Every structure is written in C-alpha cells, then in structure tokens.
Image (cartoon, rainbow, N blue to C red):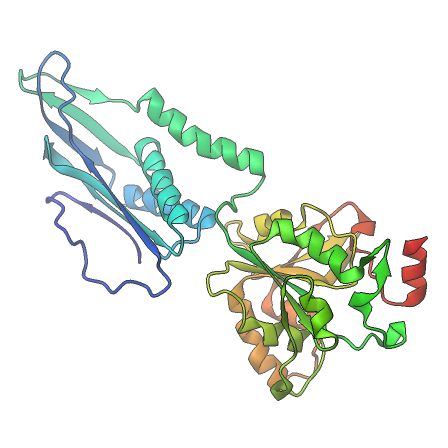
Length: 354
C-alpha cells in the first residue's frame, strides 16, 4: 500500500487491482499532466532525467514524512521519466485514509515535496527547436516551506493523528480507606474531572476505566468501561486490556493517566505524541520529571496493547512499569514536578486542598 515507481512508459489506469482497506474512508488521486505553458513558442514535450535508486529512496522518504503527519492506509507515487508530450500524465500521487482531511493534506504535502526535493531534472523542448533546463519555481519552494514552518510552529509532526485517552479509575483505593479515589473532591471538582478536563481538549476520544459507581463516572460524558472478570486479575493492566476492545479502531495512539493526577500539563499529549511519532520512535513514551519516571502517565501505539493478552495470562509481574519496559518505552522529561502529583491517600489530598 506504500510504493514508488519510476517508469518511462505511459501511466495506465487502474495502477493496480487491489481491494480497498475496510478502514479506508477516503481516497485521493492527483494526476499531474504536461501543459502547454507557451512563452515564445509552443511547448512540444518535457524530457525528465533522474538518478535511479536515489530518486526512489528520496520519494520513499517523502512518503515516510507524510505517514508521520497523517494516518494513512495508502500512499503511492508513480512518476514518468524520459520524453513526455503535452497532455500526457507525468505523475500520479494516490493517498487513502479513514478521514478525507488526512488523504487530501497528505496528497498535497507529497506533491509539494516532489516538486522541490525529488531529484528529477526537467528540460522543456519547444516547437521551434529551442530547449532549456527548468529550475524549481519560487511558488513550489514556498509551498514546501509552509510545511516546514508548520512543524516549527507546532513543535512536532503529529497533525492529523487521532489520539484517544483512558483514565484509570478502577482501583480499590486501599490507601484512601477504600474510598472511590476518582470521586473525591478537590477545589470543588472531583479528582477524575480535573484529569478529564485536562485531557479532553488534547485528544479525540475519552474513556474511563472504572469498577464502582459507574453512573457517577458516566455523568462526566465519557465512555465508562469496567474490568472484564475473564482476565482473572485486577489492576491497571486489566483495566487497559478491558478498554482496548472498546476503543475507536482508527486511533493512532492511546494516552493513559490515573484519576488521581489532577495537575496534568496542558501540553502533555502533544509532547508525548511528538516523541512517539518521531522517526524511529518507541512503542511507548512515559512522562518523567527530575529522573523519575511516572509510569502511570504514558502514551503508546495501539499495537502495544496486543502484548497485554499473553502478559496477563502468563506473567507474574502485572505492573505498568514491567509491561512498558518489556514492550520498549522512552522517557520524556517535563520540568514541572508538581504536574504529576499523585493523590494516593487522604493526607495527600488534604495537603493539595490546602
């Protein structure tokens, strides 16, 4: 579904007879043609040369950049070289995704970079026998530069990623006298509402893992998912695995946080996502402060959730730390140590209240 082809022969449609991906909701096909951009004489044809092997690798890199920014099910480029006459197709870029905005924007991005980054040399040949080599137009350079400016502004190539959040509120609350920890008030709001209000503007989907007082959690307007007793264990891993089957199928990442961290930073999700979706990024990233990892506050790719099934069945370590280390995780440093304050017991809650 991700391919690059350089060819001298005309491009014939359909490019391939393939079955559409069941999660694909939009497909975009851009076709670039040779136009008669006549100046002093009519254009007869273009002659394109390239550096075999290098050109394909560069276009694959461009597709890789697009996949970092948008959730794509397909990205394909077919580009002609050699002598191409007016009216003939010169390039085809196809993208597909669950949502039309991803397919549209990724397609434009790939074309903008093809025009400026891919190593093609283009010669215009005119009917009067004259010819000249063409340099990249200023408008093409400007189009590519706007994507670079966008990354610099946002701080990470995560535009178009769909990220969900799961708040863990299924514990017994033994350190808090077996009170339902998430439903304890702090400054006039429930602890879990502090967490939900911090995460909701940063994500596309919000759910809560809870086993008691489900109606109270449902009143927050989020999906509430109790632990599946079939797993035979309790704790955060059971809550995450129980929720996994209820998550939207098109999520690119899952943000997880406990219900007793009411001071989460407003840039938590974008900062973790920037590391998760970086080239060669790990399967999971964990928030950290001053050398301390906060394993209960992490973001992971959905594929990592599959490893929970065998771990719950055979492992003796059901901690988040053990699972994340086994799957591979990286630590992302935050300067504000208070942002991850964990309200584990009543004295801690009273101190934060004061």
